[in-house]
Figure 1 (cartoon, rainbow, N blue to C red):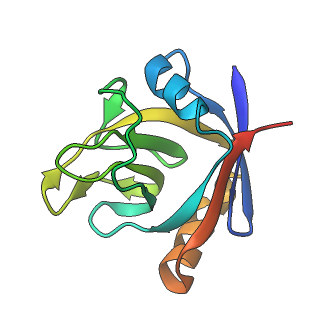
Figure 2 (figure 1 turned 90 degrees about the vertical axis):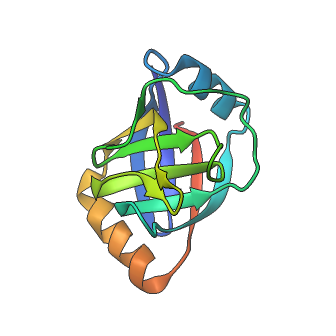
Figure 3 (figure 1 turned 30 degrees about the vertical axis):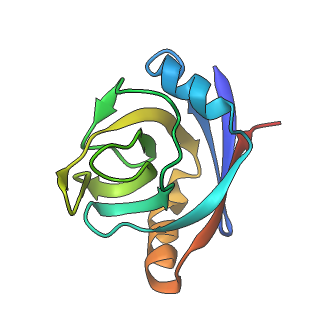
Length: 138
C-alpha cells in the first residue's frame, strides 16, 4: 500500500493510492508526484472540490470509474467531453459537467482527517481557491 498526504489549504489528510483497483491511473499519476494545483468548489457535481487540469493528458482510459464518489474518495477524469480534472468528494456527489454525466477513476482514498472534509469544502466554497499538494507520506 502506498500512503500519501494531501494538504489542501490549512487541512492535512492521510490516504492511500488505490493501486489494486486503479493500477494504470495510479502509475500515471505517480509520474507527476508531488502534484500541486489549486482546488476550487465544483459547479455541477454537489459536495466536492475540483482540480481543473485543462488538457493535461495522463494517457489513461477508464478503470474503477464512478459517477458517485464517497466522501474522501478522489477520482480522476481523464478528459474527453470535458477537461481533465480531479475531484475530491466531501459529501453527496453526482459527477457531471455542463456536457452531462461524467465518470472518473477512483484512485485515492483519504483515510485520516476525514472529520475536516466538510470544513474544507465550506472554506473552498466561501473563501475561494485553495492550494493543494498531493505527495508521498514520509
